[in-house]
Length: 366
Ligand SMILES: *Cc1c(COP(=O)(O)O)cnc(C)c1O
Image (cartoon, rainbow, N blue to C red; front, top):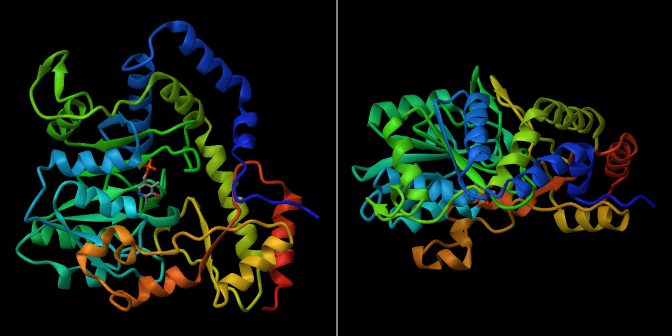
């Protein structure tokens, strides 16, 4: 029997092993490990890849989000619109700054439903945090119109959407600040934790550069209260290697997704759909099915490992009990949480493995 893990990160490493090894070892030999030339080079290359003026390398995707709100001086008394259907990090970035998350239901593409934003806006609303979930852009044209009309900032959580586009513009440059994670399983994954923000605004850029390094531009001259969230030189060097191959990797994910879309024809499975004008980068291939546990254990008996993104929406998490939400408050989000399943989709998946997943799913009968 075949054994197909949900992810197989070693294959991504082995594919460009000599380049990764060279990048890591030459950094070790250089004697310079934090805030050096690799970091600057990666920031320049990533900004150019996204199409933004500036990039600041950071320690994680969560830090990118937290520092984005801090740079915009959002805090107590401010409300931020955020999708109810997201990973908890998006919401944590708001509460970490003392601001209040206002949750809005998703559309059929699992992203913030633009038609439900306006009814959630009050005179305390300061920003919309858009999450481009699973690798597909939210409807940025509509969201931008609403933000402009109500004078709100847009922050984009692009942790799952490196290079994804809406119309001809990449996610991350539609709003004021784009926040990225390079956690190893993300499309542009490092070999440890790291993240970044992108922006076209020089003031925001300078502020986040200070915030990540103890609030200082010049060593020991601390102008504002900062944190330590620096991107290290080894991760930066490895990220430059991966970024140089990103088009090929993106193509490979798209091919696997297309084979799933064309090959899976079991009526018990609802396949993902693609928004008009959106270019999906397939961070996750998420299907829906009614008897999820039965489906997952059937696949697992056949050697195929699946995951759920995400089984408990933030409003029902133990951590956010104090916000006072209850089951039934966000029925669409809760339905997704009960029925979604992510299929294996990773760099280096073989033809045989892809076919085996398709055939096994097509033979499933509850
Ligand atoms: C991964 C992820 C984050 C957090 O990134 P880390 O680098 O793990 O801190 C934030 N938002 C979303 C949507 C994510 O998928």
